[in-house]
Image (cartoon, rainbow, N blue to C red; front, side):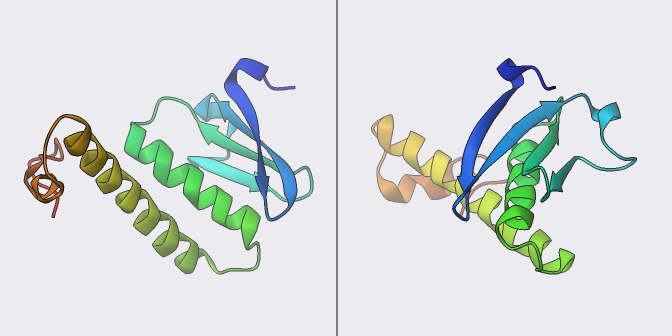
Length: 116
């Protein structure tokens, strides 16, 4: 059983799922997360960047919500959502710190680029 300090429950498509953060070696080779529709459990690898964690969590939630959607569509949807959440966070931070909504386009992403 997973350490409860590394997990939480989340309603997805009307069912309660457990989201568990695990050591990467507990996942299949080359996987950052997985989704078990029988046990309604999503596992996410520990140790990733905030953006990678967001993308992986959204990816696995998409599998849970729409289990019959093909992998390519899951990747497109999850990555678009993760990028939007990142931009929304920068936008929100700019407004919280006295910036104007247009200022968010000038915020650095920390990866050598700006949002916009």
